Length: 462
Length: 112
Image (cartoon, rainbow over all chains, first blue to last red; front, side):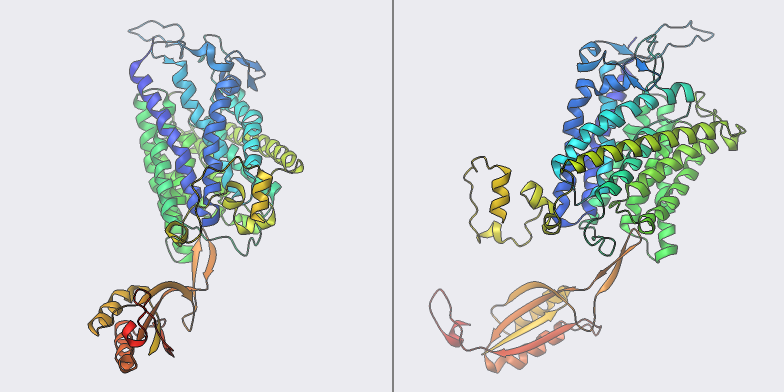
């Protein structure tokens, strides 16, 4: 039976999560140079377009349709979404002393399409997260092709592993191996989204190589207010991401909402304290980064820990990520906007700390961690899930990235990188700095340009 | 006639402008510029990465004035732009052959 309250919350959550990708675009966009901000925004925005279509065509089916083999990937029964219209999804409602068991989809079912849209937004933001690792230097269509291949080969299967539960999409439906066989806990995507994107970011930063001048010239963030604005939009949208992952308007959603808030607050403090001690000044960029680190870390844990546990996770994540962003200089990979330092490390912190702070007093479907007398069992499962996603994502991303690079389509020329990727890849610039071209100098033409092939654009630039 | 060029801290612009207005100076040209002198630049830190800013943002103010007014204008700008801290800027004076008002074709001091 459809639950109207749950359905309303899941649809609203889907809209909240949708806003995270443009929020991420501004978070990243403020950190790059003025000459490459449009390209950064576009790398994120194109994920909305590409994944939005692929999800309907076959992505949802690969992730959530009945298992095709071994808990690895779903079959194509729901491709095109035609078989989802008017259908419900939910779990069998267990019997209680006052009411008997309710057969699938239970007494609190959702329209499948509400779930389709909610999960779509996760599939969009995950590849978008990777873009920060290769700022300023990727060809736009090369990146777009990467998104197509990456979600198909990496994200859709991994989402099946982590998010597809037995008996949800159909009475006898079989889901993925991490959720159902390994029984690692990941409430909203610490593994499938953040470790996945973080490992992919590391692989891609290595494949594409350093930007010209790095690490001597790291590029000063051109608009720190954008960064804080983007982080705030992310924080807002993350309530849909985490509290929406309860898939119900209930107590668990409120717990996840609360934990998301307090962990993020604690992570801001954690990051700023590390900055104060190491560099003597608390920075705006640090506060924004700390918030995102906290949001990342609490994502897998928000439905399984107490608010005090969440504060501890946030503090640890803020401090660990503030230190982890320096690793790229030690190991020499140009992860330009710290996808590894924030998302890989934050995701690992949150996923592993469930093994310490998890408690069944918050969620009977969760597990007791080390600090609640649960022993090492859950910690081992968490580590196995984190490690599997990390290795799978890193290896597959490396192969995809390498193939696109060899095909000649991934990195812009050194000349374009120096003169600015916005102009080279998009024939635009973000800001009219001087006002001259807007004011009279030059000869702006409003006559429609007859279709100009790329080759001709290149020529006219030369 | 003389061209007085002043490099000053950006926030002193309003004080400089009103000081010159009180002297009866009728116009000026202002531009945002970057540079360094004794002040040098400064260092900023982004996620632990140091970024040295070699050039400091300043304003360049240009005023053309009658020879008799040069000392008064120099005094006014020096007073208005003065904070006593390093980086207050510099003024210099260069001779000007003539000035033409585009609208009327007037020349020399009449065009000021």
